[in-house]
Length: 428
Ligand code: UD1
Image (cartoon, rainbow, N blue to C red; front, side):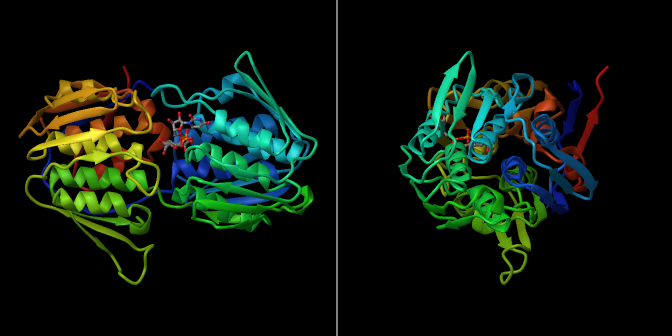
């Protein structure tokens, strides 16, 4: 595990272009979906991040092999003969390991999965995933931190989620692809990454209606009708928001190539209220990207995280960082993970005036942060601390860089190319 640190100093306005890589929270699920069909798959716009390799290692243990072709392309080969077991030492390293559940129970009729790890921001149960599989006829047993699910064949079911959980929607969706009959998932999560997974499954031969909506209807197909496919991973809206936040606290004008306004409308609205100008590169082409322009001090706003299309919890550390240097007081409410304010202590070390309690944080903007040593507690918080460093006097040294590497494709190089004073300092 890397003990490198990222050293950031305040620089002038950022200028230039950054290409937004593919989304971590999509590519890992697409990779897991290759368990569902024999054949060859080509994924493009794949981010160069540590979690992709962790997922590749997990899939290799099950029987799907990944080849990095360079240029953001992954070739994946499923030659059948899968071993539907996700062992602890691989599964515990990423949350998305839970995404092998639906594909394996659907395709192989059985799965044994060590309960997943991932970011450490509180309890992350998978009860809704398991109830969904049971509703389709699977028997599920959880003991000693291992989930075992089996069903010779699943059957279609009408499933209403209590909460639009991303992971539960994905697992029920993938399992339903091979169920006999039709499955309806109501109150499904509708994050762009779920639509991306649906589109990939359709390219593989699945039959899914309602893509992008909160009601997904899946008509089951025979196990051997799915086949290999080629697919471009959707751009990462969280990485796009990171470069927006960096521009917001530094000033300047940056083109975010590939960023999709239609995937982050609510956030863009709130960022504009804070004083950012955000325009499409080409109003006739939603895939062309966005131009973000920042001048002067940001204005505070109140923000609450919600499932998509609301403000994603993954944006929150970035928003809190922007509020930390904005003019006024902002109240931030976390509706998904109450424990997800751990980075606040680190921002306080940089001089931020934040009071966090349970689901809420009150952020009083200060004129100036001061650089010091901080530790990244998770992926997004790590990136937010780097952004905070861009707004701090003196030197900010962000440790725990291995968290950032899990989800960011060359954050340091991309920010440096925009004119940020930033470098990665190797351990030792
Ligand atoms: C995914 C993302 C994560 C993001 C989150 C919410 C991946 C790998 N991770 O996580 O970055 O922060 O969506 O946008 O894509 N819950 C239950 N029971 C369940 C399932 C979920 O109680 O069976 C709760 C969770 O504890 C949490 C909330 O529902 O409080 C949201 O979880 P969910 O939408 O499932 O998030 P993940 O898929 O884990």
